Image (cartoon, one colour):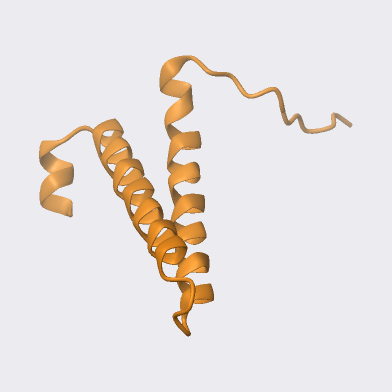
Length: 79
């Protein structure tokens, strides 16, 4: 991974990781939907939702590149 980091920009790596996590989430959720009688199907659903949460996290990290500002601002109280 460090070899890729030397070649590619950090934003590109975020986009690639977001796409891979989203693809993995879609695969596991489709697997859950098509095989409902498998014993470990609840685990596959949770695995898919976990990858979906990871993809969402990567997308949130990418948003400032598109000039999306967050409405929540944190400020320290002054004394």
